[in-house]
Length: 258
Image (cartoon, rainbow, N blue to C red; front, side, top):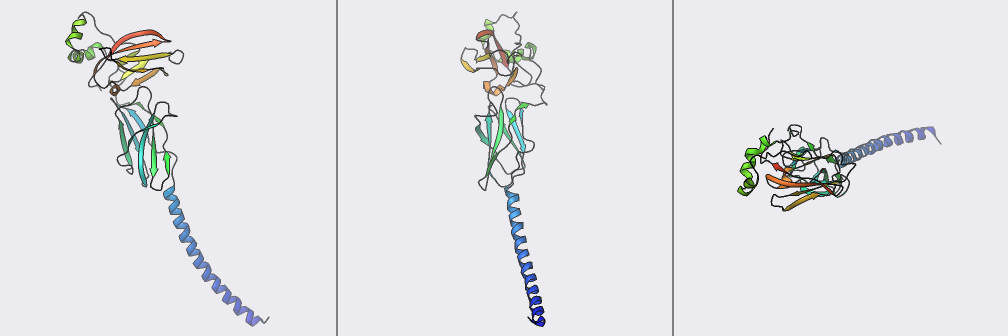
């Protein structure tokens, strides 16, 4: 082969290859940029930051921060055992907002666990972490209500028949096991709950059955006052290993003290 013919052909081939390389690189760059942007939109972190559930007076307040923008629906789910039996109780009004809140106005007796179900516009979905509702530290909920705290309110809510039945010399005192506190909620304190089987039944003052807790599984539980539907007096029975341990009453105030 003649060298004078080979070299021009090689130079021509090199010039064409550079142009093709530039074009191919440009196309690949656009493709990768598009693909990366798509992946960024589809990226789903494993949990939401600052997802909390606080026990307020008569309700539980959920609060969370979300960086998701492509959200079609965000529902709130609740369970008593944190593992199974999660049920949807409501939906976020503005699921794409950075900060969101939801009030559970009718929490269940016992421990309430919550999680979020998030459905994205692309059809994908995820669950948030599961959180346990905890007492709001801004409310002094550990103060047991005594007779002096409730006597005026109690008189206003008792019927004439109830007032006549109770001698004036008898001063009511709270139970050491089931009592209301300054936040208006009902506390169940049974230190041996893990060793013994305790069950509790609640009644209206006229004897009408309200609800029961078949097995108290923790030494300390908080029942939201909203469960009882109204303020006033309620009766209860505590059973230890099937035997009646205590039969007494409690008072739920209409308002609470801070």
